[in-house]
Length: 106
Image (cartoon, rainbow, N blue to C red; front, side, top):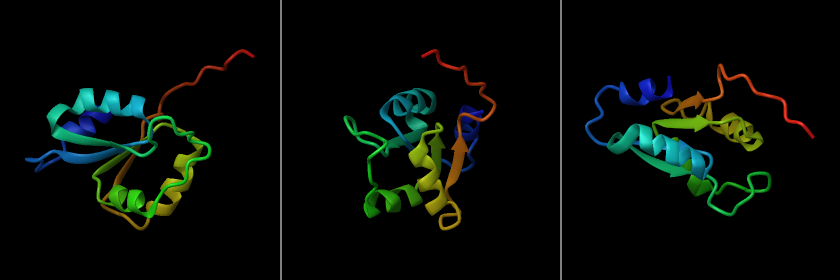
C-alpha cells in the first residue's frame, strides 16, 4: 500500500520529499521509492526516540514534505498532533495499519 501511494503520486517529475522517523525506515523507503523520493529521517542516528526533542527547523522541513510515514513510536503521536491540521499538504501514512503485532515474551 505504501509503495502504491508514493509511486502513483501524480505529477512527480522531480523526487518528492518524504520523512520517516528512524534510519531503518529510511533504508526501506529509499529502496522502494528509488529516485522518485528524497527520504529524510527525523531522529538522527544514536539518538533516543524517547527523549529526543524536535527543533522548529525539523517541523518546518516536515511541513514541506509530501509524506510522513509513521511506524507506531510514541513520539510520533506528539508530532502528528502538532502538524496534522496545520500542514494539510502533508500526507501522514501509518505503516502499521493492518499489521497484527505479536506479543513478546519476557
